[in-house]
Amino acid sequence: MKTLKLLFASAAVIMLAASCLNDDPYNAYFVFRKPAQAVNTVYANNVIDSVVLFSYGNWYVVPGEGQKDWCTLDQSQGNAEVIYSIPVRFQQNTTGDSRSMRYTFYDLNHPDEAHSTILYWQYATRGDGTLGSAADVKTITGSDGSRFEFVYDSQHRPTSLSVSKNDMILYVLSLRFNDADSTLTVNNGISTLSSKYGNDYQPNLLVGESDTIGYYSQYYNGYLQASANYAFNIEHHSYGKPTKRYAMKLGGQSLLPDSLHNADSLRIATDHMIESLKLTYSTADNRRQSVDVNQLIFGTEECDPYQLLSLFRFARNTSIISKAMNDGNGYIVEPELNNDGSVHTITVKKSSGGTVLPDIPLTYTFEY
Image 1 (tube, rainbow, N blue to C red):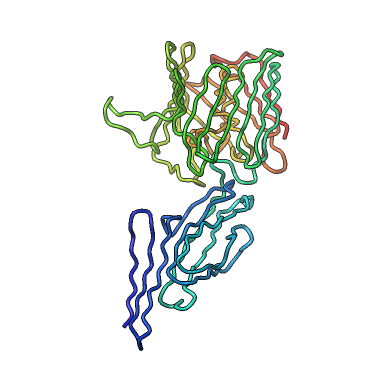
Image 2 (image 1 turned 180 degrees about the vertical axis):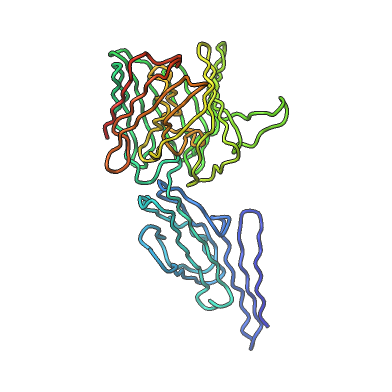
């Protein structure tokens, strides 16, 4: 008589088979400590994970049909009663589409009775919301004398940003992604902020000794919390200073990876600036370059460097804004694209009563 059981205990997935047949008893099972579930999602710029497993019997693994080059296991067979930690390696996804890969682990002597399958699903987008094929911006030069300089690592994560205007430094950010403990550290020249991250490499809340920057909820009637896919804020809190808020209304759009979402409206409140704007979008895709170009609409001084670097993915609208208006006043945005869809230039013009930009158009030129 043979029995087969699938057990879930804590973070482990166990497959067990037992038999008493012709005096040939056996036990066969797999215990997966990692991954903890059968279906596992990774981003376009993830490059490594691991499978941690124990098998009662000798085992082997069979990859599924389809493309096998982008996801590979470092080991395809093993011995009984040994704990294995096997690297899983991913190629970065530059195809523009999501993709999947399946691996089935079999007990060598009893493959029909003991086997377990895990699947990896790789998004088309990186953790910051850009497409896996998006070009890394090296510099942005503004017609107002401004200059933005960027450095990225091999996984397209920003490691530094410096912004100057007429040779005067406005701000400098230095970023360190420590994959050993999944901690992002950001030094802005005044304070150091940090946050844990998942496989999207995104902080939820950057926290320093006197500063916090991150997501905050909006509330209906002051007490009923709004779902993030309806409305949320990005807020900068600094001890002894007014809070800077970017309030976004989405109205129920999906915030899942690879989803398309554009905020219906944006309200900005700082110590010297209040803007409440209805947003209209062009057909230009804002995911084609490493930076969020929509952050340049209000000029160099008012650009939020953390959102410019897409450290808060949900605040990055999928499309490039064409108009940001309030009763006919506001800003008109005109992008010029490269052949790959990335931005070559973006020109911002003030429409009637926009309060931040000078009267003359402001043009930013991108280099990759």
